[in-house]
Image (tube, rainbow, N blue to C red):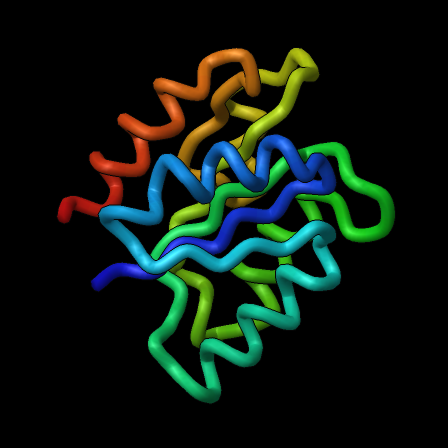
Length: 123
């Protein structure tokens, strides 16, 4: 079974996305970028590895861009994990991709998050 990491400082978002994916995927949640990196490190050493990351952009400490950057640049085991960026801010697809994200989706469109996940990680 494929494994998803959801990183968001909003507990309601974490719960709703976790509920949406728990039937089809193994789901890990983290309420900060720092915790997300810890989950990634543990998964890389203990398996199964993370297959997809869904992360919020605006978080205290390590934000979504920094998390995506660290996944892509600093940890060679994780650099091929697709990252979906969620945000309520106005950003462009080009800006998200420049930071290593496979997709950018507004938080207001949770149905698109689910459909994009199924595209990137077929069951």
